[in-house]
Amino acid sequence: MKPIRQLLTKFAFIVGLCVFYTAPAAAEPANTEAAPAVAAPANPEAAAAVAAPANADVAPAVAKPVNAAEAALKKEADLKSDARTKDQVCTRCHDESETKPILSLYQTKHGVRADSRAPNCQSCHGESDKHLHGDPSVKGRASPDVVFGTRRGTSGDFETKEAILQNTACLACHRTDSKRSHWEGSTHQRENVACVSCHTIHNGGHDKVREKLTQADVCFTCHKEQRTLINKPSHHPIPEGKMACSDCHNPHGSVGPKLMKRDTVNDTCYTCHMEKRGPFAHNHEPVDDDCTNCHNPHGTTAESMLKMRAPFLCNTCHTPHGAVSPSLAGQSAAAPYASPMNSGVAITQGRACANCHSEVHGSNNPGLTNSQFLFR
Ligand code: HEC
Ligand code: HEC
Ligand code: HEC
Ligand code: HEC
Ligand code: HEC
Ligand code: HEC
Ligand code: HEC
Ligand code: HEC
Ligand code: HEC
Ligand code: HEC
Image (tube, helix red, strand yellow):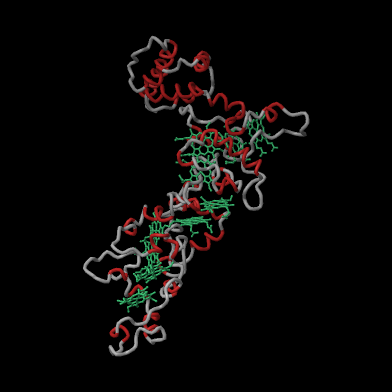
């Protein structure tokens, strides 16, 4: 650190302290950035913490910051939330010496001590009185009130009671998030999937399920069928890391079917495939109904993620028609081409229906009298 910076930092530290001691009076401290943050702590707890800044934790925190404003802010933050102090109940044992990255929590949003909404150890693990002070009825150290991610059932989910206990801890803060407002009653909730079946918390900021490239692997621990499909030749670019399951699904629950992000399957598809929404002069009923009548969005062997190749796909709903015009059938006008037994069937069937009915998602061509037949 440059000496001048060091001086500045020290100065800031002193100013910071002065401001704290004279809190109500310091209406206009020189530094505007620090001002609002500092003006606040009418908090008696914070005051107490300031009174005794022989605190080893606070000092190194102040030594580092880059400028005066940051120093003041950081100090204020540490004191205001006083969550780190609370954490010490646990971190005096669960410290750097842990093999598991427990303290990497401080590199995540849960560890942002400036955020008064952020949890301390006990917000998630419970008060854990018996873990802290011993329980005569338990040999060795009793577990904390809430232990996450253990006792996992064979299917990857939890006993109902266990799931509720764990999820209640998370939902205490996350129930009101708009993205999780349909958790209650959702498929995953009903199946006793826990928040931490997908999320890791002591992760230093690498929550696999929230990263496009790694998300699917988390889902695949339980959803083997989708793993198979997504690796078929025609698929959404999920293995390539350009898309994620959560582009279509909200794993926390939704009003749509199958945890769809939007209210319907089609509305979800339209978020990216707008041109398929229309409006068209001539709709194709199964398209308006549900894209999955013809596509499997997870992947297929047939191209364009079609469940089957045309003509077989089309023939699941339509009776193959004969050559409807003599020229199509390569026959003379006199030939009885309309008959279902006619060789024209073979001609049209042998070709991809979409060669002629190319506007299979809906046709818009006003110039054609027969655009209802989904020609271009
Ligand atoms: C006096 C030291 C000490 C304190 C204080 C302490 N722990 Fe522990 N904790 C331990 C030890 C030792 C273990 C390992 C026990 C074992 O493996 O059975 C442990 C294990 C745990 C586990 C894993 C339990 C499991 O079953 O996998 C969690 C979670 C935990 N502690 C959380 C906390 C929390 C939260 C606090 C603060 C409320 C806390 N601990 C305070 C010593 C402590
Ligand atoms: C005491 C409140 C509290 C509790 C309890 C809590 N969280 Fe959070 N959580 C927060 C806050 C605050 C944020 C940051 C939100 C923001 O910045 O918008 C957050 C963020 C997150 C994020 C996003 C992190 C990021 O980097 O964007 C995830 C995932 C999350 N929490 C999951 C959980 C899970 C799972 C649990 C239970 C094991 C849990 N939370 C318990 C308050 C809490
Ligand atoms: C089936 C897997 C799964 C489960 C179970 C799950 N989540 Fe998530 N969560 C995700 C995925 C995927 C994302 C990232 C995509 C997104 O934002 O929807 C995410 C994102 C989040 C975020 C990030 C903030 C944001 O913008 O959405 C929070 C907070 C969160 N989850 C909390 C929870 C809580 C609380 C629970 C339990 C009630 C939970 N999650 C259960 C998969 C899951
Ligand atoms: C947001 C909720 C949350 C907070 C806050 C939290 N934990 Fe945890 N803790 C978990 C979850 C979930 C796990 C399971 C492993 C994981 O997801 O990383 C866990 C696991 C643990 C474990 C067991 C690790 C293992 O794998 O054996 C210990 C020990 C622990 N936490 C201690 C603490 C301490 C100490 C604090 C405070 C510094 C703390 N936790 C804060 C949610 C939380
Ligand atoms: C711990 C296991 C587990 C994990 C991890 C998991 N799920 Fe699930 N999921 C289930 C169970 C159990 C069901 C209900 C039975 C089924 O359909 O297989 C389910 C059902 C679903 C459904 C169908 C919903 C319905 O209403 O029929 C979707 C969609 C889904 N999960 C998406 C995801 C996504 C996306 C992820 C990853 C972000 C994920 N799941 C991760 C266990 C899990
Ligand atoms: C392009 C949109 C899209 C993407 C991306 C997507 N899904 Fe789906 N998913 C759907 C639709 C639509 C359905 C309902 C129709 C169906 O089952 O084909 C569905 C259904 C499901 C079901 C329920 C299947 C059943 O038989 O009930 C599961 C489980 C599922 N998806 C998991 C996943 C997983 C895991 C991923 C990521 C690898 C994923 N999905 C990615 C659109 C998508
Ligand atoms: C988040 C955006 C997004 C959503 C939502 C989405 N898609 Fe896609 N879709 C894509 C991308 C990206 C591609 C690949 C385009 C490419 O490779 O050029 C694609 C390609 C396709 C293809 C063509 C595949 C091929 O081989 O040519 C079909 C069919 C398709 N999507 C159907 C659907 C259906 C059905 C839904 C709704 C269940 C849906 N998509 C939802 C982004 C999305
Ligand atoms: C009646 C069956 C059917 C339905 C229903 C259907 N499609 Fe298709 N889709 C096809 C066929 C056939 C192709 C191949 C077209 C070709 O090869 O010219 C295709 C191709 C696609 C493609 C890739 C080529 C292109 O035109 O961009 C996308 C994207 C697509 N469909 C999206 C959707 C969406 C979104 C929906 C729902 C709104 C949907 N499809 C409903 C039959 C259907
Ligand atoms: C899931 C069932 C289903 C599938 C699959 C399907 N269709 Fe259709 N199609 C319909 C329905 C329903 C109508 C409306 C019938 C009507 O209006 O008499 C229709 C109408 C049509 C029409 C217009 C007929 C008219 O008289 O206006 C054409 C052309 C057509 N489909 C071609 C195709 C082609 C080509 C395929 C394959 C790519 C296909 N269809 C796949 C259900 C389907
Ligand atoms: C060589 C071009 C061609 C091919 C290939 C073709 N069609 Fe047609 N189709 C037509 C023409 C032309 C009409 C309009 C007939 C008329 O004007 O009465 C038609 C009409 C239709 C109709 C509406 C009338 C009816 O018979 O119900 C449907 C449905 C249809 N085709 C489905 C299909 C399907 C399914 C396939 C693939 C198995 C297919 N078509 C292949 C040219 C073709």
